[in-house]
Length: 322
Image (cartoon, rainbow, N blue to C red; front, side):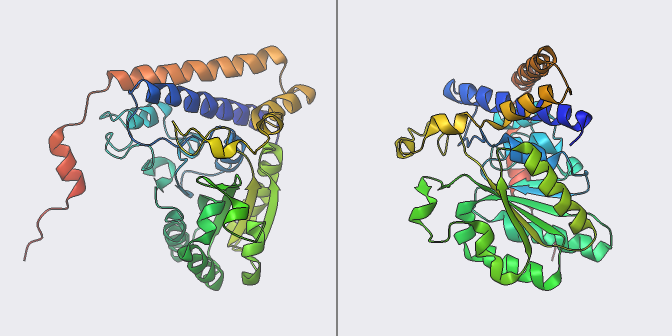
């Protein structure tokens, strides 16, 4: 990562952080609708991965899609409008938090089905193979998704076909509300896929420099036809499974310890030490992110509600001529 990239990644992480915090307040004020799953604390993975991708690289997300969408280049005001159910949202406000789509920027979809995005991402990887170009497909998932049968089926086919699929596991130690040790005896996701022989690596996902370096190597390899590959990023979400979750099951986790390795503050300290920017400029980057989030809220509030007729039009394909 160089100076220009470092500034971009820091800006991206601050925008995700303040977006998530603002969404939480809007949810409590009943201005954001539906279930909300925050990625607070996991910004380093989204930014370290997506800021290296092109628009023609496909990305698939899961429950915690806001950060992936913002980092992939989806307009933040349209993401906010989607969460607030407004017509200017990415999906006219009809999809909501777990169904963000922005084809123009390669965000091909998010899903509330745990691991349901993994086989779909393989479809995009296969399409790139058939086209003969060097685009890749990237799928984000949590460690809980690894227990799903379709995850293993996808790994089997992806390795059989040598597809340009990069699997990025955001391993935060919890499958929704359940500690990893309560649902599997295998400590590392990278060990689960070992029998398939694909390239795999486990890194500190709260160190965005490490994410950038590892994913950059994986991306280059996938573009050369060395896929599939799996990158396991050990990270930590600073909030409960969903907005409003009392999260009493997290009392055994040392929250203070994880907050000390906050990915944003770590990059900020590195950037100042490396002479990329001073502390005043770093503060200005954060202030700019706050202003952009507030502008997105204002945009969403001004956006109209979607026409009711659009609901049926978007859901039903209509009659098929005989």
